Image (cartoon, rainbow, N blue to C red; front, top):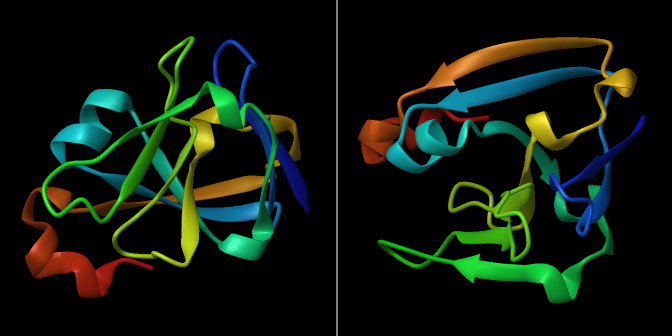
Length: 122
């Protein structure tokens, strides 16, 4: 299934190949909690940035491994390259057009204790 997504203002647009029934991860780390990010992890080849490369700004912290991309105009992080899946993307389900999502199962992840739990993330 091809899912369409964007930031709030629409300057950044992308597509994601994923099933209509998706498994989503809700992380309780400070960044995910503050942003309301719901993770849909996909392989790099299943993500296509359609427009807005020039409107993205990069934020990194701690180990500087994860690449958090935010829209320079509206500030929304629609996707990023996570530490846990450096060869893929984590897409914010809240930024997807929900008309292509048939069913969503949400699993909690204890990101406040990331090092102790990284083995549990899918």
